[in-house]
Length: 378
Image (tube, rainbow, N blue to C red):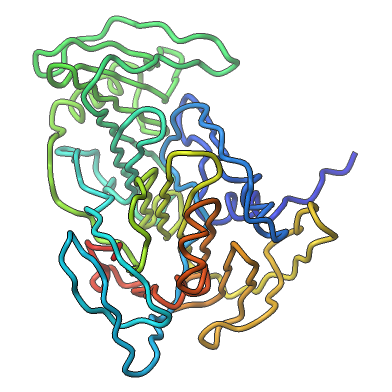
């Protein structure tokens, strides 16, 4: 039987900020697919994503509105930041709330094997609060390691091995004097995947996952412990991102923030916010453009677009698909931009121009990281 063509969500997830786990667990949480499909079909109340576990490594979202902040000439808007009124440029008027930087470097690598460098970051608050940094070979698809720092709390769930087999603790040497165990252990037959977990401080756990690194079992065991023992935790440095958006409504909770600067062959960023209650969210994302313009069209209400959406208008001169709760714009300063919202968040945005208004309050910073900002929100 011929495989069905991927929907816009699936294509975005495959071609831009993918969520498939790159290493052992292969866990996947395709959050937002039903919501995005419904938004493309014009519905503002799409289902709330189901949170089924931790997502590793790759950026999941597809969305961030690119767009030069095109304020109407001379328009000045009073906004509220931390309780004090300030003025910003914008049209229509938007009230900005103060948000802390959603992506802070809570963990860093010390020593890494030759050729590997940190190029992917995730801050996740969905199920298990964690920060994650990934390192890969520059411009290659070789070895990869991922360091995860969990927030304060009990020991995280062990998860499952391939085939759905429940994982078990395997004895490991201590890491810097702290108890440790393997969830995946390099084996003598040449298994290059590993997952090492240790308690790096009271009520704080860390994990190191690796895949595709060279060496036999003993060499990989030594490599894993050397990386783990040199890792640092508790940093506060904000990580620069390739976008800035103003006028994000108050009362939102950062849900998941992702930056890939070459990780998994991708360059892009995602900001994901939620509000308590069903179907209330805001996702903003940018992915490096390959110059292609989507040709997909909907086949009727409730039926998905096949492929990337065909533009139905222009925004700031860029081909774009616009629906009541979704914007997808092509070629904005080197990126494709997507914004979607639902529920009470969409209702607030509709008072200031909706998702299109938010697009006009978003600035894409281009492909050069030297121009990126550590303050991407408001």
